[in-house]
Image (cartoon, rainbow, N blue to C red; front, side, top):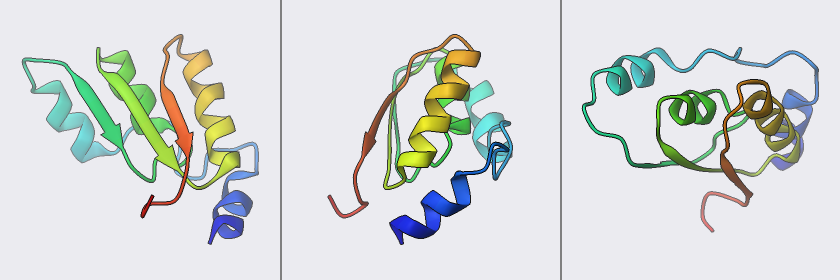
Length: 91
């Protein structure tokens, strides 16, 4: 499965774009408080970066090294910091 996701994310384009998931976006924009956010199976970082831009302390994880690289690239582009760990969901 790791190979599948690494292949999916190795292209220069973002597989799911760089805009956050609409449900997440609509929910977060209506919150009055900020805090910590844990994002499992985060892929290329679009949701993690969105949350970081909106004041959250973000920790994400995924099994794909290619996804992590692109997440950090997007975070740098948007001038935010995210924590991102490579591991499988069960760990």
